[in-house]
Image 1: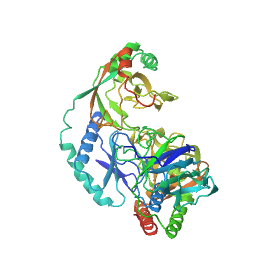
Image 2: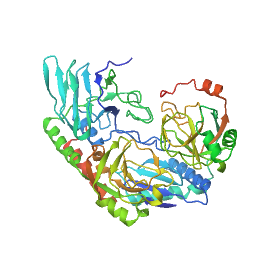
Image 3: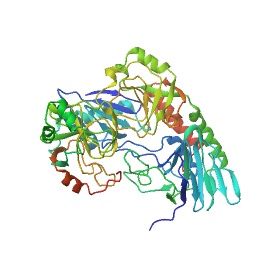
Image 4: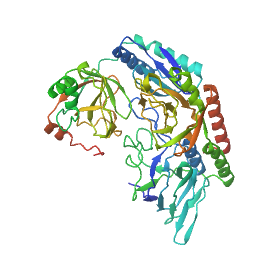
Length: 230
Length: 322
């Protein structure tokens, strides 16, 4: 592990690996180890691509001790096998208009038929690399290389809640209506984040995900649950 | 079952939300801490009316609101300056700042424009009572939860006040509270530490960052402050893989114009971070008005922790907690 202090209260941990998948497996194990055996004073953990940001309580922070405790916890993280394979979470996605405003552009950029975009996107299993940016926004790994597409040059002012986007080799779902620059190729009717639920974020780090294509009629039926922002 | 309301919003002002000290511990599901942008003023205000530090209050921005009191209440206005007025059928008078006073049933509090900063806290003895969401009463605007229905206040909203309050502070304590908070409110130099990616910036950009006088842009909110003023180039073309962020992080995108993250920041971000505002000066960040000029002063991590400890010591000495 590599580390540096990102502020007088934040320790940044970097976990290099041969490829992105292995780096994320290390991040998942480190997150699990830190949650199990919390170093004293650790108040916040933010996992991301190959890194974790740890915030310590300033009132009690002793750098040497915080670092030693963190190293001790993380030294055992890689020995533990990756968290038990979780059940696959199935997410219905409508890849039809008007749910997929950028599907034609994505198809054209890759010389594909618009139906191939949906087929290729729904084919593989995905894994949740981390939740970041906004509440419940899952960064998913596993996007087929043929679909990797740069962001829009000008972000949209308003992306509808549930929109499925592509940005580079990433794919993800917008939990709420917000501005955004990812290319939108589908939309789920599921509520991805609800702070009042026992499990607020439908997806958490390490979850495995499958997309189930649904037609517009089924999408609209499933959308019955109000989201409060539409 | 539902308690009678104490405060009716007649006019919410520009942006008024219910805030406490935020919700730690949910960053791994994308929820930033949030809470009062100037936590020092909120804590002092709460202490003055006999509340615990983390009681929920109303955070007003740029122009405060007008509130009708449906029941008697002991309140205080803390934070930046206002010329608030208390209106009743028998006339009107100015409301004090930083000193607790009583609002009587039927009276109206008109807060108006905010000067010398951008945020004023209306703390009520007993605290604003809204449902606890993920361990906090604060409004998470981007997530649409917490506070009152997850949104900013609107005309017609009614707020219930809790009952848990101790004795309010005397005049001498109120005077000390005002002096304690005036210094941070007047600061034009923010103490900051070496950022997570500072070593990746070229030396000219780093030197420019610590010597430039920036100006706060109009495009600033609870998520972050955009600064006018450029420091030259950002490493990797201002793009990196997303990683964890914190309030006070000074990000430098490709344009070279820094963005300083505030309490409602996205939990992860992809711009290199050149510096991080020290915890002691985070309340200052929450009060910086558009067009305000500022500089950054580099301190070591040890100095940053000592400054924070000193601020806490003075706070507890001048305005003791309940």
